Image (cartoon, rainbow, N blue to C red; front, side, top):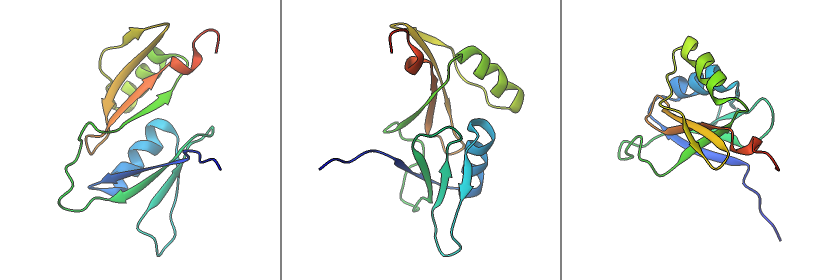
Length: 122
């Protein structure tokens, strides 16, 4: 028996704001049933679905327990594009044949763009 990771649940303070962030910068499409408190965000080119759920009052926003890593072929080009849209990534870091940069979503969750998936020999 096998299991695969296809969904990631994010607890957020403002569901609408979080959905708009992932739609605007990463091209996700939102889907929500009228009787459901979770909005499912589907990525444009496959990958894990983000499930956006309202956080309970006791949940601390932005704890560094999860980082969402988005594969991009050209980190600098993606950073430049996002900057024109209002999202600033931090410095680009280089490691073992790939590069990455970090930012935060509106609730302080860590997001990263990385070319790791495009390393030579993969």
